[in-house]
Length: 566
Image (cartoon, rainbow, N blue to C red):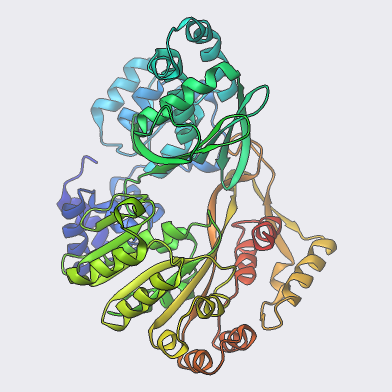
């Protein structure tokens, strides 16, 4: 942004939302993490990107463009190439009489404006927009992935056939490199979390997991499979000639605007090796808890408990429910110069500045329990344990929280209340658990409604009956069904590829371990009694939180039911 830090400070402080102390702290964090001050403020939930754009728009007297709520013709967008658009952080989003409408993250970049004017030979009308909206619209530059893949295969398949030598040699040849690079590029562009490469009797199927669901993307010929797997193994520093045992690794992949970490899992199957690539994309700014979907009441509970100097905080849910992201977001809030934070993870998903992260490695004796034991000799304030899997790790986590440490960990259970009986089954002593346990967060991920094609509708009687039956399963639920008379759904448009959904948001329940619940844990870890007391304490259960997001238009009933019933 062609604005001085003095001007940005004036704009921010004039809003009255951010105070001097918070702003100065954000300045120090920006310097420490190498981020822009506005990204730290937005990431720290001190101000929203939307409101920041409104403030800039008013200050600069430049109108803001709402890119996500309108159809943008690709014929207009392609007047500016993808490379140029990303370099200048701009997009052509329409025309008005003889003017070209251009949205920019920095509308004061006169050199970029002059370039667009000269390139298109049209006068330009400049609008202001946020980087988040720009990244979403830039995805339109990506062509149909199936056509692109088929084109690459058609051009390079003969060359792959002609390559002599073993799979390791062929894996270094251009055809296979091009296929994998294209696969990764499109996965990142489509916000995929995983790529599945699966071999069957007659073909190789490539699938992407987008917004939590798998989608078939393309079929590849069998002849490509050995070299493709070998290429992945080479990048992940795995054994190329080992095909009988599972292997795990990771590598880096660079796009035009991001450095992506790829986590690799190779597994032998009946017809050959299956590869799953987990995409761990970084962010220009740290996530904040509100972005994840936590309500105002949940935010208050979380902030109260993570501000404690000791105790045990658990995040629970099935695989792929966003537990690690929640923990990393909490760690970012706690990451200050005056505290020592250590983590023991399997695997390390994101590299965080100023946090000491250790990878589990059973071959060298580094387990969750051993890592915890070693950390306690390094004077930590905060410890994160990737997962509590056994009695030894649990006992070490409880011991650490008893001796003046804040311990964060994940656990696999279906809801927050059931975590307590599960911990008891693993061997936790009731009085020790009651003394240390502070909070349990249970969560799921649901797909978000596409805002570009959102419409209201009256829920059908059949749907209301299903909701009623689901609520009846929890006799302690206090949700008022009257607020669901009208809900929202997205019809499907080009921006969401006709699905009606774009992105994901979390639904949560948070069990705060109050004095009454501590007494119940000591007396009897009965799940029903704990749930009843939690309801009396005002706890919002998973399904209720999901319905509240339905009422606000963030998701649909079918989505909430899909993840609750899994």
